[in-house]
Amino acid sequence: MNIQLQKNDGLTTATLDETRLDASVAPEFKAAMEDIILSGNNQLILDISKLSFMDSSSLGAMVAVLKQIGGTGKMVIIGASGAVLELFKLTRMDRIFTLTSDIETAKQYF
Image (cartoon, rainbow, N blue to C red; front, top):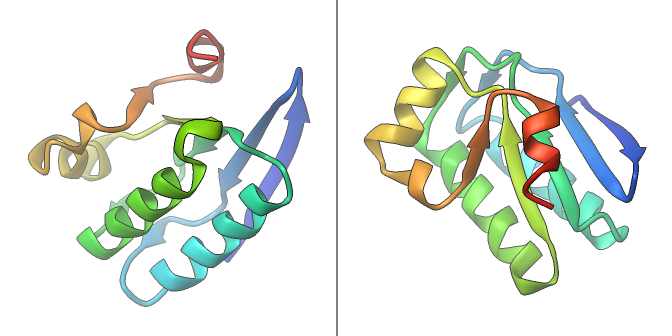
């Protein structure tokens, strides 16, 4: 699992360097994100712009990450498009997650 971290202005941007997020890597993604949060990065922008495919198990992992952040922080997802964005809409998770198209818009939510 390749996740690049960048810290700026008290925010952590986690860029997922993968094109697929499915059942085979969802547990690894969840564990990596939990480690990032446990390291004190609870103001998080998750960049998934490189994803072209995501399944429901990966969406479940993202829900677990959001729950871990809880009331102590916030997570905004940027770059969801195509089939990935459709999955968020189909499952109505676009109402649970804050989704934006770019990092500048995401920063406004913090």
